Image 1 (cartoon, rainbow, N blue to C red):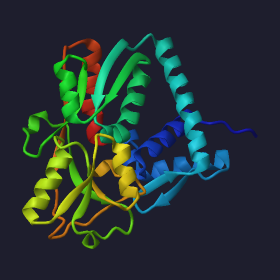
Image 2: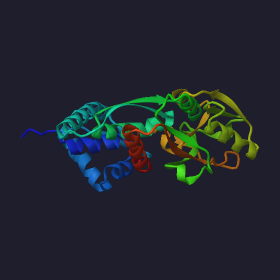
Image 3: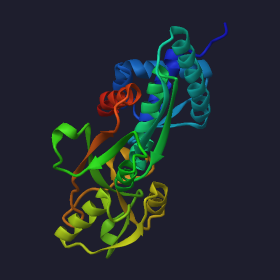
Image 4: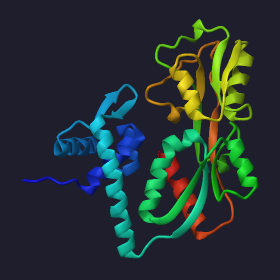
Length: 283
């Protein structure tokens, strides 16, 4: 008997690949972790290949999983477009959405895919940059919406989600071996840069800026080399890097709040804003 790829199984598979964790994926799709695990087992039986490998911090796609993900995303996109077209539902148009790199890597795949499933005729133009650069674009009216970081202590009513900042290094990093401590940080006006320097200054720990850039890829590359440590939001830490324990000379960092700025109100921008506010706390 021939087997086929069930849409529901593919949707759960994509959710797991994006969340990198069965527990986080379960909350996204509204299933128990046990039910999601059974779905994954069923899908692996159908394709006769392992799709994920488990790690200490979640799951990673295997080579076969990477190949299936490409097909699954295309199948789901076409399925959702067909359903929206036949039901004559959904908005259309273009919106310009600003998002910091670290949030983009974790949150954007789900946000965009879920919104596209309801509104396949909408084009979302994404501009990735740190919050200070997004605010500059905002002031020029170059963005319709922007996801931005706010410092600890910002009014609660503006916050969609809070994210702790953490020290990040490659496996085996011993910060006691460095004097001064080499840091890979975003530009000097960003919250991670300001928080890192302020906490180390208070602790009296010597440090040097080994790399300062708005490029998240550049920051993580230097961390992977073992030549520096970085500050990221907890959910943005790549699976191959580790969160460093805080000590008297590597003090705890504050949290940041994630907020959404909405410009001129239109049905399209309001719909995407509501989708973001509803989804972000669950990711």
